[in-house]
Length: 432
Ligand code: DLL
Image 1 (tube, helix red, strand yellow):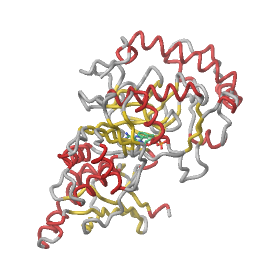
Image 2 (cartoon, helix red, strand yellow; image 1 turned 90 degrees about the vertical axis):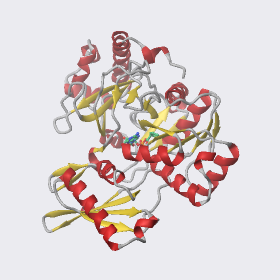
Image 3 (tube, protein in one colour; image 1 turned 120 degrees about the vertical axis):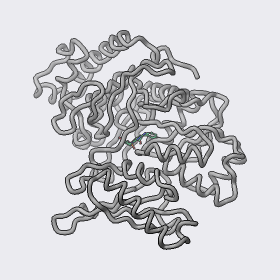
């Protein structure tokens, strides 16, 4: 593992670097982007008001709505001639959000992804199977450039064609898998079905992200694929993958690359900044990106900041696994619950498979929740009483979590749709 100087910088020095970068950034966007200038004028704040890092709280937030209003290129700070790449979010709700990169941004991103892979224990000797989707999604190309920057061998296979993935993994001797955790689970399952023993393959590390996943899912993936499973986080609006990553030494919280992204946690409802250690919405300011810098971007992701020193030597703050997004949070009879918490319950029960679907509906004024979940082949063909006992077990554990009883439907193995990218875990019929 090669540590970059910034990754181990004493915190005081890091804060000084952040302030210097923040001041430059704010002056630049004020000067270049009329929309940002307008918002800052409205809030009564000028670039010279940023004297210490904490002054960031005076700056207005940026939200997905701001990006939509400026669709497609309105928040770029450079002429289109300097933009060398565009990516966009899928835009399932409303217009997609478009992000642009200059040559320098692409270099920066490749460096950060290389740094992330290195933290995950990947080296130039590795053969990386990159099963993140290539295209407008930032996962594929983002990881690709990082893998090349590290000097590893990259197989740009993209997502899908699962049988082919397995043949290539075996024939090319892939040592690292990059994919969403749900797709890695799909791969693991098809591998066993095709008679390929994961233990006989050289695969040793998985770098998984782009969707929430529980500790239970990590444990299961590590066991099935005989690998170390590392969590990587990022979002297109900030740069793509490579904003934060776990270190292989501790696998306990993701180090945020604070020399480039300034994190804050704000209260989900009041948006007031919260002190280190408290849980709330993650907000990021990009400190060094040129084409499309964002100030105080409200991610809607829920986490917290952790300043406990890490044995890996990085001084960068950690954030625990993102449990979910505020807009994916289910409110069941007034109780907030994330699909990943349901996943954690399911994964702790013997015989339950990591394939599930949560269906939320409303009967009259009452929210209802049904969890459809697969059980292993032998349990499904077993006696009814075992099925009943598993159902009751799941029901009781979910009741402990949310305080009310929900319907559990055990379904036959392989009936829940398998993911090839980001998994859909919830169908909310209240919204249809
Ligand atoms: O998912 C970037 C990415 C690609 C990250 C590959 C990691 C690996 P978007 O499509 O813009 O970008 O989606 C960003 O995905 O706001 C989170 O809600 C979620 N997300 C990303 N990584 C994680 C993670 C990419 N490790 C949105 N854990 C974010 C939980 C994650 N959620």
